[in-house]
Image 1: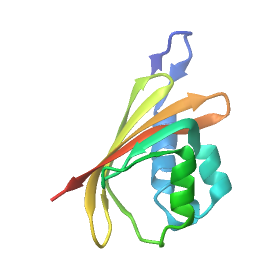
Image 2 (image 1 turned 180 degrees about the horizontal axis):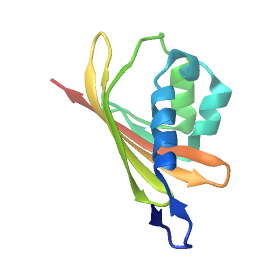
Image 3 (image 1 turned 30 degrees about the vertical axis):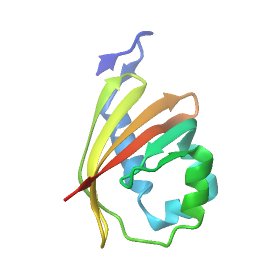
Length: 124
């Protein structure tokens, strides 16, 4: 455990929770559930996709609403606490057409964890 600036500990359970949320975001069920997505994405969310496109929360919700369902395989999922309230997650996605190295930043709030930033970089 590592104490934060106010003495509250961050735990392995926090890291496990965030990794579960990251994995859940890649499922068809979650990607089609606008209410769940709205609760998981921070109001100041931003994404730099593997295509190079940049999205904010509103645009990513619209994009996911219209997305053709695809299976996203999560490989090499790993994370680390960078503070008591921030977790950095790294992993590789694999779909039938593309692989990408992915990085996410999750922030703890009074109501739980929210995704603040995500980036995907294509792999050859």
